[in-house]
Image 1 (cartoon, rainbow, N blue to C red):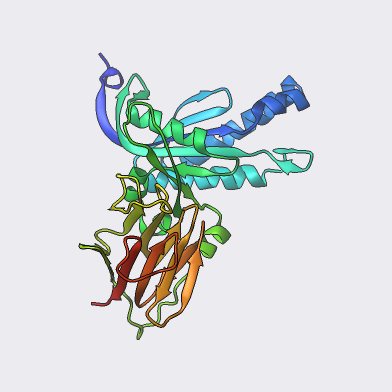
Image 2 (cartoon, rainbow, N blue to C red):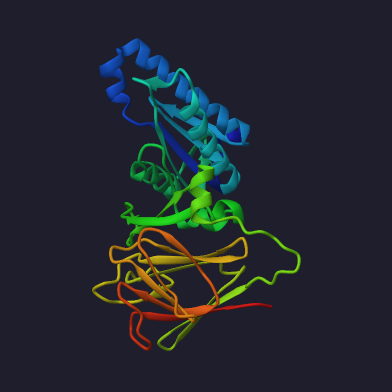
Length: 305
């Protein structure tokens, strides 16, 4: 029995990428031209995978399945795939670029006979089916493995049922284009004499929570899988998340009714499907204007070392 044929349990990032609308390509371009175009996409995906230390496990028609030792390498490859295919002069139809979608997940897999098996593979494939053209979709487990730069480029957008899992899995979109990342989390100037907040302390009813380097992401919503569970008719299942990155605490809303923030200075902001930097202290309210000591209101304060 060869070493490759022995089943081994390891943790890897699993990535699926496929060409969006490949059936339409064949209908509009004919079999040969469409096949050539899909083959070019596959080669770009393969090249990006190998460039960032990944392994192409298999190709299936218009789809690539690959594994990576780390989550960061997987997203480096995914972003490279999107960039290169979007800019490729030969991958255009009627002047518009061919699009791909990418999904990935990090977790335990079984390696056997040059293939990988397990729930992680199914979840990664499910992320791909949730992605739209030009998107990279991933999971909370993947986000937890990322470095600060990639983690700050991920935003919670939805949740989806996964076969074999009781609860829905949060979906994160990876903002792989530089302008998207900049609009979500603006770059902070690092002046040597400037003091930065290192902790965000939250109070809700009788609970106290802390966000810092050890716990950089906190999710809020009415679903039980959130870190802070708040029930209410105006509260979405995955209402918002707060994350710590680049010396800032950013509230990212994913709700139907939005999130209100009232700073200690009295300034008020409303965020819906967008992000806002939390400064100083104040109140966060889910779906309604903040009122102290109500079940939808969270008190927060930024703290320094």
